[in-house]
Amino acid sequence: MKLPDRIRIVEVGPRDGLQNERAILPVATRIELIERLAAAGLRSIEAGSFVPARLVPQMAETAAVLAGVDPCLDATLSVLVPNEIGLQAALAAGAREVAMLAAASETFSRKNLNCGIDENLERLRPVARAAKEGGLRLRGYVSCAFGCPFEGRIDPAQTISVANALHRLGCDEISLGDTIGVAAPLPARKLVEALSRDIPIERLAGHFHDTYGQALANIFACLEIGLTIFDASVAGLGGCPFAPGAAGNVATEDVVYMLQGSGIDTGVDLERLLDAGDFICARLGRAPESRVAHARRACSSDERSARQIPGG
Image 1 (tube, rainbow, N blue to C red):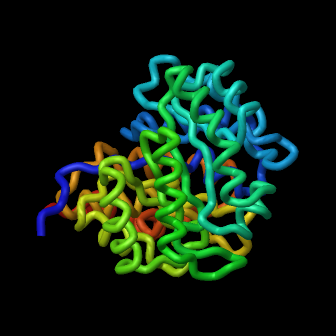
Image 2: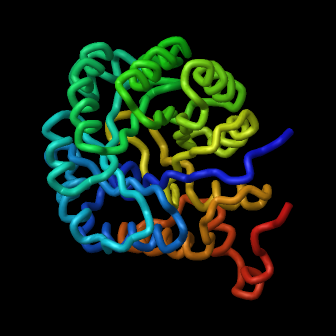
């Protein structure tokens, strides 16, 4: 078995993570989180979204977040846009990468996006065209790629159909979202294998939630077949405000520990990442969900020094 030498983590905590937290954080706190994550070595960071504030108040003032981040930041910041209005706001704010969302579940699409799958994809067509004309990199999310809180298991053929539609719209990268965390390693692997027949695997990403504790296993199963892009959220923040029962995203700290312990380069400094997780959780008034954070907290300072990431 040959594993990739290096993978890219897309840090989704500042958007997908914070949007599901009850607290509405000040712009300055969101900016500091992004800058701490970049300082830890994360080079792809979701900074926010241009969804109407009445729907997701935690993401209000994303334009101010983009404006306030250090212009010398060594990271690519992306923002979620739901429609053409959101895209124009992103362009005005100077965004260089945008993401748009489609669902593999008809019911979830209607409840979350207020239209069916086909209608939503048609709505996204001018968004994708305008993003490309504006020189933006474009990311596509497939929500409920494995299961839906309303419909249960999703037929892989449906997920493949939606992912291919986003690919035809011009998405540079397509992230398969296990929105409610029901995927298991073998189905996850088979879905990526099937999709890679149509879409180059280097343009696919895995976005796993840890509801049933399967996220790391799913990542490793997909890693074995050549998937090298994975979404994760610092401290395991998040879930989905529109998906009942959705637990948090897989914790970035846990992904980094597993990969670096397996000899795979992530470019991330784990200690600085843990500090970023402690920072944001203190502002949220909650403990990190990361298993690595829990383990480090239980150790004395001397033990922490001895328990570095295992090699090889």
